[in-house]
Amino acid sequence: MKRRQFLENTTAVGLGAASAFTGYQSGKASWEGLLPQDLTIVFQGDSITDAGRDRGNYYANASSGMGRGYVYQIVSELLGGNPEAGLECFNRGISGNKVYQLADRWDIDCLALKPDVLSILIGVNDYWHKLNGRYDGTVEVYENDLRALLQRTRESLPDVKLIMGEPFAVEGGSAINEDWKAFDAYRAAARKVAGEFSAAFIAYHDVFAAALDAAPASYWCPDGVHPSMAGAHLMKEAWLEAFEKMM
Image 1: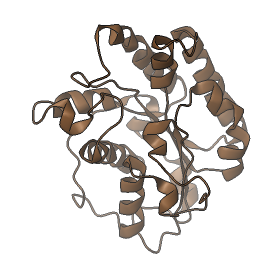
Image 2: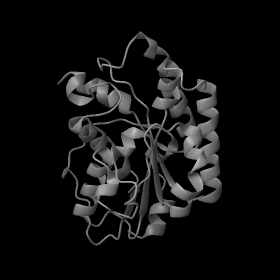
Image 3: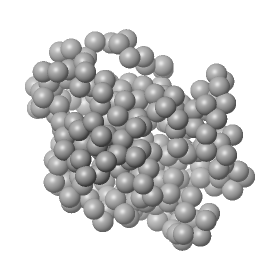
Image 4: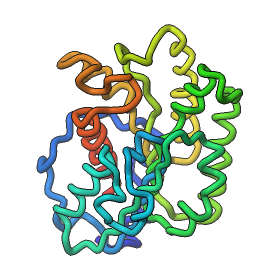
C-alpha cells in the first residue's frame, strides 16, 4: 500500500468509535504487504508510554529509546514483521506529564517529527496529581487542553492519523481507592474528544477490566496505573488491533 493511500483511507475506527478489543493475537493476521511504505509513528504520553526509556537515545527505532512498556512491544512487532516497510517509530512519552505539559513540548516532540500516525495516551496524572495536591486542574481543563492540542495538531498535520488511548485505573491496584470514582469523567472526556477529531479510540480501561477475569490487578497492573509486562502485552494487542483497522 502506498503511504498516500493509507493517509486517505477512512474506516470505522477512524470515526471516533471505540475500538472494541476482540482479543487480537500476534501473528493472527499477516502484516506483510499491508503496511504503507515509510510511515512515521509517534507515541506520546506520560510514564505509561515513557516506561523508563533512554531520552538521550531519541532516534527512530532506537531500542533503548522505546522504554520497557507497551511501546517497545508494539514497535518490536511492527519492525520485526515488516523489515522492508521503512517504518520510523519514536517514543516521546515523559513520566509525570499532564496535557498542558505535552502542549509545552509539542513543537519539538511531535510536530517536528511529522508523524503519519500519532498515538496519544494521557490523562492519569491530570487526575492523580489532584489527589496528592500537586495540581489543581479539573476535568474541564483536561478536556479543553486535550481538544486544543488535537486542534493544533490537525492544523499543522491535516492528514495525520490519530490513535487515542483511554486513560485507565485498574480496580484492585494498590493506588486505586474510592477517590478514583471521579476518574470516570476523564475517561469519558478522552472518548468525547477522540470522537470530535475522528481518532481511533482504544478502550484500555475495558481491556484491563476484562483481563481481571483471568488474573488479578497485581498480575496486569500492580498499582492500577503502571502496567506490568503482561499488562503492556494487553495494551500492545489492543493497539495493533486498532492500527490494523486503519489499513
